[in-house]
Image (cartoon, rainbow, N blue to C red; front, side):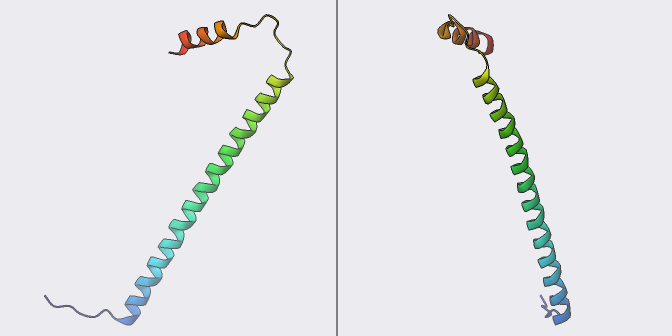
Length: 77
């Protein structure tokens, strides 16, 4: 098998292309990560608002937590 050395210009172009591809891939990974972070923060904000609404809601008199939990288990399991 005959191995020919690559021309330095060709090697430089190849390295630049690889570097550009690596930067592009890294950029896409960072962009996807930031997008996911924004989504998670939005979900967290909704959760905080719902928790606050629950804390601000009136108390229920004579609430039977055992019965409530039992009904939830029957409904969802």
